[in-house]
Amino acid sequence: MGKPDLEAYKLNKIFTAPVPELNAEQQELFNEVKASRTTPRDARFPTHNQANHCWNRYNEWLICLKSTKDEEGCKNMRNLALKICPSVWTDKWDEERDEGVYPGIKV
Image 1 (cartoon, one colour):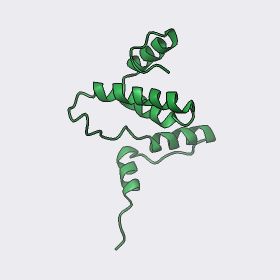
Image 2 (image 1 turned 180 degrees about the vertical axis):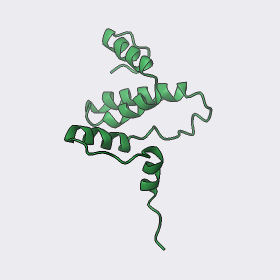
Image 3 (image 1 turned 135 degrees about the horizontal axis):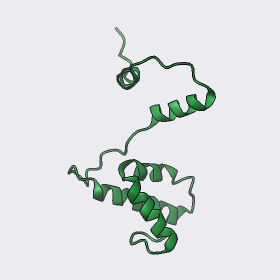
């Protein structure tokens, strides 16, 4: 007996109804949702309150930008920050960076 297909099992738990025919744009969005993962557990932040984890992820993205000057190369780090942080926070921090008053890492 072969190994069970864990990916299919996970997707079947999330998407219980059969997927209808999709146009190219819908299929692209569907694939993006299927591939979306949250930020991995970080042993530095063992509690349920993930505010510090969020702050670190955002600043780690800024460190990447500062050291590489490659926005495309740091896109994954930005996505990790966006997945764990409330959008209200990241929007505020983005605005503060634009205004030059962000208290974290300066890029």
